[in-house]
Image (cartoon, rainbow, N blue to C red; front, side):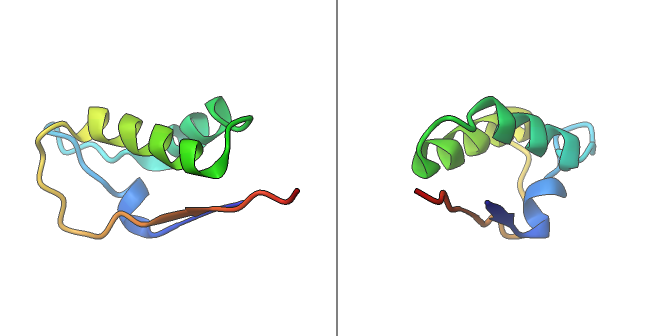
Length: 68
């Protein structure tokens, strides 16, 4: 399970494009076999690569849970 605030998908890059749900889903699915901490780190790395130095005006909060 991945829970996140709207600041994740609404994060903007320098061209004023949003990260979006598709990019979040792709990032999540590409690391789905990893432990939750690694999933979050992977998504955050992709998000920061997308936004680069663009200042964000909303929180970026995510929680990943895996049932064992």
